[in-house]
Length: 428
Image: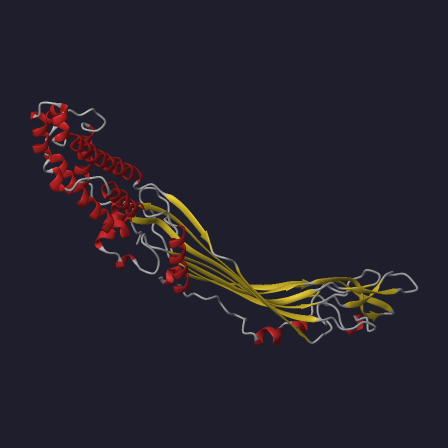
């Protein structure tokens, strides 16, 4: 990708800490401040797309990578917590609370600060190949060759057998009775003619059916199992001494709150694609096979007599069909690997990596009757708080019409011809 497709954004993550206030409600100026959790960075790399001159729209769906690495905080909350005294009156704090000493060392040691997610494409290419094999429609070109071969597998005489039809029909025509007709092989001859006619008609119908479906689109999606891991371990308990509270605020009759580090990763991967298929050239053997099917209509489903059979031949059509059918099957079978293509195909991945240090609720001394005498206090909990780092990464890897892991430059002339015939082109 060119440098034009690379962008970096930075964002400071912070929270405002309000001023403390006297018990009579007056504000203690200058005690508030902005607490900074750090700076988040997002890097994005995306392939630029050209504008379609026909529609005026921009083509989309190329390679895409973005990874956002940023700190996060989740605060507790306290109200009217005693943080000191001034002029014989309590100084109180109301606002968010966070254990300032719960983050730095533990998270930095884990190496997550400033880390971006993996950019490697090979694993997604491998998964994309697996997804295609599991969810693609059965290859129509290969099915076509199998279907055509089935019509010729049983009941159809060989070319030498077909070449004797004219002589056998002539003998039957010259015979003087139905008995002699049967003796001279009329019944077996009629069966052979009907068998070949049926096979030729089936060839035509099968080929017309696949011709009708050529270029039509089948959409598929395949989701891989969600991958999720989480590890937890305890670290030393500690009192929160940040965001407006201090040692005066602590309820010393309680114990320091527990802290726990968790390392979690969740990854989703999925494939989306639209399949279609092309067929070999229909200019020669294909059109001939359809024509032979029309010839076969004249001989199928009628009560044949020696005279009718004699009048309806050109005899050569059956021999020509038999030879042509083998050529069609061979072409379609060889075409099978290239016949199924994707109008589009993408492997996509989204991963979330998170390291967090969470602190359970801490107990503080609250003034429950501000600006009244005598002063009364009670112990209140702050609620849990947490601080950590999170890396969110998203990737999109496109396939070429024949799969993942190979560029357009690696496609054969036949494959490129198929994509052109189906109107699938690469926007450079």
